[in-house]
Amino acid sequence: MAIENISVLIGTRPEAIKLMPVIDALKKSGINTSVFITGQHRELLSPILAELNIPCTLNMELMAENQSLTALSARILVAMERVLKKHGTDLLIVQGDTTSAAMSALACFYAGVKVAHVEAGLRTNSKRNPFPEEVNRRLLASLADIHFPPTPGAEENLLGEGIEAESIHMVGNTVVDALYYARDTLLPGLTPDEEIQKTLAAGREIILVTGHRRESFGADLESICRGLLSIAETYADKVEIIYPIHLNPNVREKVLPMLSSTKNIRLIEPLSYLRFIEAMLSAKFIITDSGGVQEEAAALGIPVLVTRRTCERAEAVDAGVSQLVGPCRDKIFKAAEELLTDASAYKKRAHPTDVFGDGHAAERIVAVLKSYGNDN
Ligand code: UD1
Ligand code: UDP
Image (tube, rainbow, N blue to C red; front, side, top):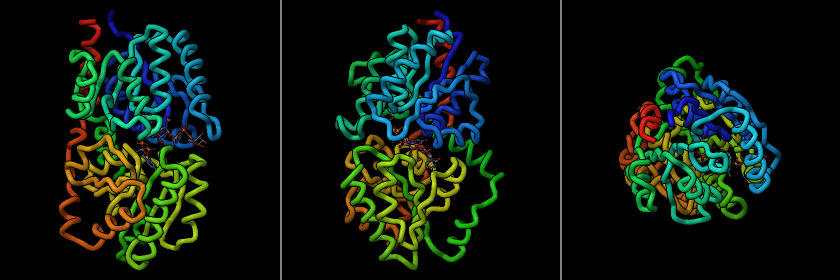
């Protein structure tokens, strides 16, 4: 069957960023392309869609305040069934491991629509870490017809689970395509952020922080905040911590009371993609549990402390740019202290690496999709 109509599914902020290069490459290749938005994210997503000029065919607007995974999953399944009935789609492209990606792929399976999975094969092999993403990924591996792992390690994971080799195409991670495009084409047009400039001019180091993983809510998030407080207090004259807080209320209710009265911790609203890249490029290092941020920081050569117990991006740890510190106050503080005070240890870590891709993943994905119809 020839693939004539391809649709791309976006639910959350990172899916928009990582699928932008694919949408762009599909359009350039002349394939009839639609973009479906579940609306799992709303405020986090809409500025990025505008910033990256991502066209939207329809938006299901499914976000609800502090939504449960079950309710969200059920609503995506029902909405996607309707969307697939209304819009003739031969193949849906999903990305990563969100509820939007997993449930949309399941709806496609029920409707007999093919699925291509971008960023396939990431595994921690720990069912609840990250939660629920590790299970979403496995679901997606069994639902997808075409798998696009970003690294040889991810490809091996899929082969090890018995996925047919012919359906796997190692292409790199599209996060690097998006990053290079934004950094080199869009960022030069941006007026530099005044606060960042002031901090750097005063000779202070910037530490950029993000965090949103569900398995960390509660005691682990508290321990991460204590680590940040120790850094801010010990290095009060030397560092400024910038922390754009995710909109998940479970994050805000812990972080705001714990950190808002510390002078050199600047709690801010989520940044636009370009402003976030600017903040990464200005940072001495980053403390995060984000998957996408680990990949971007590795491509830029900015050291990262990963506040998670397990990690599916071991490539960056092996390359030395990332260090797994867990949600552990003392480890976070010690690792940050080393980066702040040991110049030679820092230098060893601060190297750009192409372990996640070379910036041409989207072109490879589209080349595979174009030939897919001829053989299947
Ligand atoms: C989701 C994904 C996670 C991904 C992350 C990227 C799932 C289960 N989780 O986590 O894999 O890494 O997005 O950021 O798919 N909210 C808003 N406005 C927004 C977005 C969220 O107010 O634009 C609030 C809402 O109260 C919402 C809550 O955050 O109910 C949680 O959002 P949800 O998409 O379920 O989970 P995330 O933690 O954002
Ligand atoms: N990001 C952003 N603004 C912010 C924080 C992050 O644009 O304030 C971008 C970041 O560059 C990366 C992506 O959002 O591309 C990561 O999203 P998130 O951490 O929400 O999800 P994850 O990658 O963990 O799934």
